[in-house]
Length: 288
Image (cartoon, rainbow, N blue to C red; front, side, top):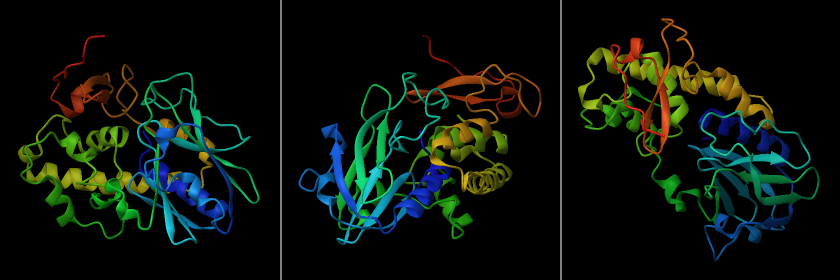
């Protein structure tokens, strides 16, 4: 699942390479990618890109026709330059389709390579909206504060967690509470904070809340800085290589040397260290 550090690096590269270029042609190969049927992605042909930015885990291409193309990468979506090699196959622990990504939409420009929007898995998670303002997209409008932002405060963190009768991992991934964190970075944050992923937020002590706040801010900002300047074809591999527990089931814990385990979470699996996070308790892993 693309998360804010990688999406920020993707937005930065797109901004650098596309700003000032006009859209020459759009080819949408999967109709479900168009989320605004009255204003399909093809309606941006002839418009010039003013800039590319990020809202949580979504991309925003600002266009000179006073509108925006907002792209949700969903669970398995990504982008690549036509004709360039990619590291997308079998590098992301959250990727369930080893056959690799499929191009669902292509945007060609008046110069330079075309941009291919890809998806993988057995259902379409990629989506695009053409809107006057990004906040017309519900996924943008509901976003909570972004921990990568220098304006992110302890008060915003406390509002998301204090008193919540919900598993702390679920709160971390809840985009209305904190923007940009998904399965992988929530595992890494909880490992750094030495907190059980299934503990309820309301049960956290003051010290645990302090550790969790510090881990959220430090890890998300360091990851964003580490991905800066990494070519988009290499971002998934860079993310995977940086993981300490996520996707590392069966490997030794880098802190205590114990074994990292997986557990069931929502529709996927996640990883943790029992010795460091759950007082040795093994969390359930679904059969099959």
